[in-house]
Length: 266
Length: 313
Image 1 (cartoon, rainbow over the protein chains, first blue to last red):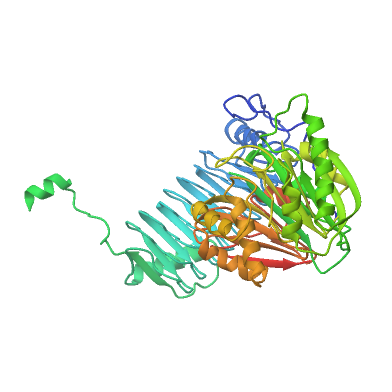
Image 2: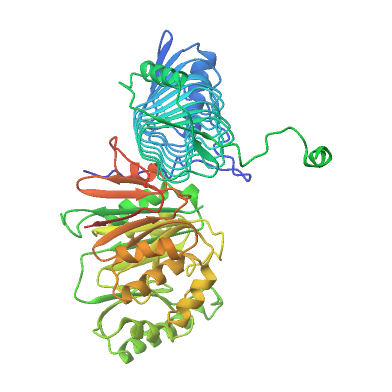
């Protein structure tokens, strides 16, 4: 294995006084466009150039399908894309990949770092390998499929959508989740569903420990239906048998009265 | 924020013959955005019979006035004298730069006594001491430090590095990582995180006779591990205990003469990406850093909470 040296000194990103990076970046326009499909090599592009190129292709050139070669585990790639399209990353992405997206169908042939798909509104993201911590933090919709394992606090503050993990998950999975579902096929770490308000966690493997106010729920036909449907859509094979976990609704008060009003009622 | 990185070549292949200095620089430079204040390296060359001692002759309280160079030279002479007083035979010396002095010595006594003799000279600090360990740390990014200390030509078997964003203590060499596990030969630590029971442990360890060169919480880890190992524990056992006894959020990498290990706190709050190949193990706060030294697609993962892992060279 021959290590490569990085020669970045000359083209290292420039910062302004506020810490904003690459202020004067321009769209590189290096893609090969063929009708509604396009592809480009990101090896020698900066993070901002890659994102500008994606926006240019999707918003201005009418391209619907993009392949990105050599993303090189850089951070914040594909963030904030708000249109229906297909994107394929031929390699791993770094932190904050595909944050705030609304619409895209993304396939990552590699892994993602921390906080992938943070606040995703809709769309589909399929990751072939592992993911870091805070995967799918605060997502509101869409499907996020991780074929490897995930780190800690998957789907923290989740407000909708589905997170499907084929491997193991770390501690405090589903921490403070409020809606949506997670289908976890491997073992999960301590504190599953800690302080959750609502939503459903399906676990096929061992649960190290349950978090505060997370209890086992009753498995019904609707649960089987949704799991089988997701497995069918993403070609994940035959689903294993799952245990369902939901919120015990003991930790929070769910009536709509303010504390002062409640005093009056009592 | 801080960034940490480490690399170890496995299976004893080509021991000491890897361009560890250049590789660590590539890794650390790609994580410059995690901490531009200072950069540090703990590098391991092929073990020698003699001890290498690296000494910083000017702490941050030394005024950079007209007498600076004279003061440093005088301290250098005093340090050499103290090495002899402690019972060491000096084989060779090197003035790495104006304020860093390195000596190769023959010494068979207690390392604590040797280090204490050297540090009895005012404003000096032993950066590292060992048969194969050398710690290099200075202000600036990895490229700056690597150029200043000619690290591109450093050959070895394993190493760790750190880019620092100062949060809890000053920006100076004493507060830069890695920390040598005083007074244990060939052990060093880099850390990303915050320790919340720092003062408790500092008082505890000081009362047992350990010295602290800085006000940085990360130094606790190095001294803590050294204290445990002095009690007869292995590096791995000491690391397991550290998870129970140190509070806060942390991921640290620690190295000894023939092993490299990582430990992560029970909240898994600080990142670490790990690549385990057949011939090498590389780990860093961000995958980007690993990709700076491996140019093909690789499988990496994040260790879970309370993980302790050790690899041998």
